Image 1: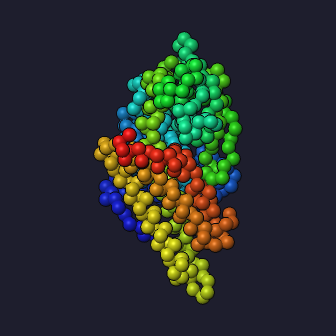
Image 2: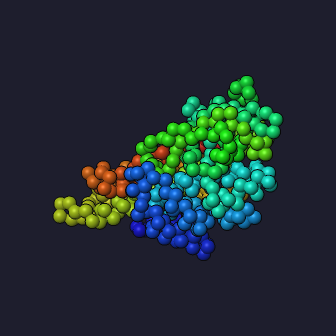
Image 3: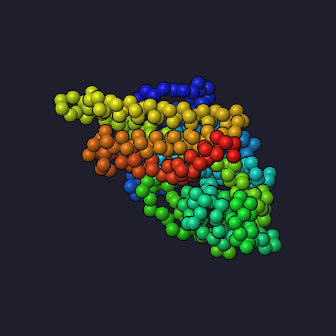
Length: 388
């Protein structure tokens, strides 16, 4: 692996986690990533090994069956998975962010005891259903309705772009409780813990995507879905507020995925530049290629430094809304830029599926879109400048 600056003074435990996950990813994930992508295959077979390493419960306290680790440790592990396969990393990231964190922070003790232990063990995956066809960046415009009926809420609507949606055992779902359909911004939206065994849940369209093809992204259709009242999360008008308060986890996760993609593209470019010869010498000896590699290394190091500065601040208990947005923005745009340069280093070979950089190029793009587009991140950063 090419040498990049290490900005973190890792503890012995953090280094052990990093190396253990790196070894697992190199052996169990990286050799299969191209096939999984080509076949749009969700790699269920690798999940038990990830679960054995504790990767699905890293941020869940020990009292609920998790490892109770810090954010830095979690992101170190996620980066190693992302460098091997970004699609597998997003399965891990989504599970560990909004579903588990919202239940942990806003759920009742009964909800925590019921759902968090199997999620920590990796027995069930988590998903998050907020977006809809006409409610993406403007998520508060969602139309899925939740109407109280005795001891349950009845949900009707369709959710879009749900990662893990066809595989999850727990789906944190946002639905509007103001039945008149009025737009009340953050208020009037509830969070529900939906399980796929409930009558009225149906998996709709499976999206055929440019990248992350081994990660299932689906529509979820709710047709008179009765969700028991004890699966309402917190207050019936505060679900959207809970989700927005928890977005830091998701944005740091996607930033880490982006760093992993960029690192993998850089590693391949460095190795190829040492092997490929043109005009009588390895292309790494040509100044044009050296400049590309130098810029790639610099941008990755900067994005990674910002990411782990945000993670460390979160572990200190500081608010990181702005830092998380900066990290997500910088890392995602770095991933796209570095992957583009890697394709250029490979030349014509970078454009064909025999080499991995074209997959990394396709995987990188979505990091600029989901968990808040780059434009949304800039809005968040600007608002924080004025304390809004």
